[in-house]
Amino acid sequence: MIKVGLILYSVRDMMAQDPMATIEAVAKLGYRNIEVCNHNAANDNGCGFGLEAADMKAKFDEYGSRVISAHIDPFEEADLPAVIEYEKVLGNKNIVYPMGDFPSYDVLMQKIEMFNAAGRQLAQSGMRLIYHNHFHEFRTFKGKRVLDYIVENTDPDYVGLELDTFWTMRGGEDPVEMLKHFGHRIKLVHQKDFARDALIPINLNGITPEDREQKEGEPLASFIPLMMRNAPAWVRSREDGMRVSNSAFTEIGCGIMPIQQIIDAANEYTAAEYILLEQDYTRMPTQLESVAASMESFRRFNNISWDN
Image (tube, rainbow, N blue to C red; front, side, top):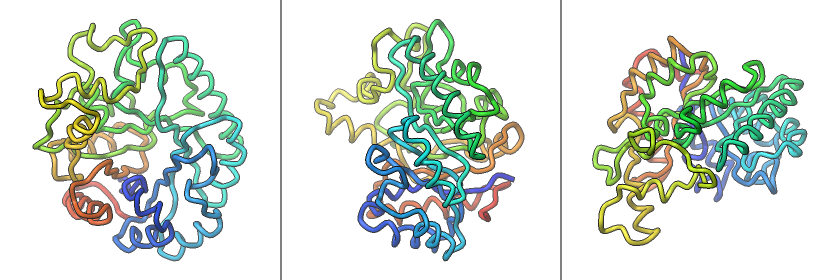
């Protein structure tokens, strides 16, 4: 039975202000399985907020929580030894490459070589590399999806997937079918939800093969241009664009995604140990209220566990 957790990106503003108090607050809500999120890895090989690993581990232990995964961005092979030492203290075995940018087929294949090398290095310390998708990995080179290239050309002993079902859906794919398709390569699942009153279409990649084919030299992860392809006519600025983009998010379990089907497919077809809730943006007053609301809504689903 898949276990529920939370990525601390969902409370990133709180983490920036007081990481220890945030860890405590999240634990008191009942989140026991935690994915840390370091978007400052160029300056901090740990959790991104200047915490010593032992101090962080003690705080999690105090409240019965544990770190089960870590997003590292930017992800550099040269930094892996320091990352490994930090994550060993936390007891974490999953190191996530959170997003790739593949402006050409050649760059994609070069990155795939790096994934294999990094995965082998992590495996020597009992860890594994996991790739996390967004919508653009469902665009294509030569008619084949980027994520399929990654899966087919990486060693399953060293490289797994963290399938983000929200971004899978926004890439024009059925998340349930993709859980079946990638099967046991999936080690973790990310779950968001899509708002009923969103100002932007679900599918960001287009429908036709021509729409979905990646153009050489076009940044694959250029969110705003792709998101604005079918934006309302009143959108004129980046601020308008972000308002439209953020309208897609709602608390998890309150939107239109087929979450029970996703849970059932993850349990039946994948090797995922955890389904991790993630809130990119909330309209609620605070991020803590948002993750509390998601927990309350998510508790109505079956075949999940909230325990370690």
